[in-house]
Length: 228
Image 1 (cartoon, one colour):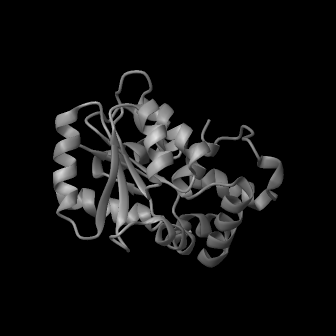
Image 2 (tube, one colour):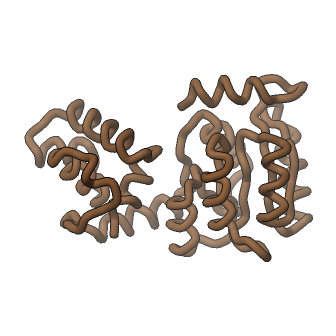
């Protein structure tokens, strides 16, 4: 994913070759201006556009072709979850980071299920935001500490692993289904290996195969996909 993103972004970036192109989406003009001033100080980041709402953001992203979009959650007309879901469907090459004052479960899990690759709170340190932009541009998933803690706590609630069917289950082998359910239960590779009497390398191979077959990006998406 990293190589593909690098090739794509190199073809569409403007004069600042090598810079990560970012679009800012927030209904508060003061917030957008502050973010623009912050990010324009970074040599490796280029602010390619901004929008005050979801519908405008779709148009700006289509025209500016950014690498990353910073998305607020609560906006009039189209909230952040809907925008991220639309972007994932219409502009799958663009990585979306939520930057919000809200850490409510509906927003966190809605955004991640919709395709967000990052979720940060607005009180995060500026260097954390800059780092997150570069990391999601490389294909990584970035969660702020409070958000990560909420996600882990929620996933832990599904122990023992759920037994209900999930979408795409018929594409997986019996062992892959077992591994997928344990990932959804919050188990690490080492724990899965111990419980199934296999090596950690075999677990990693199973997880990679499951992600490929289900068309998912990472373990977080897999956990949200399997969890009822």
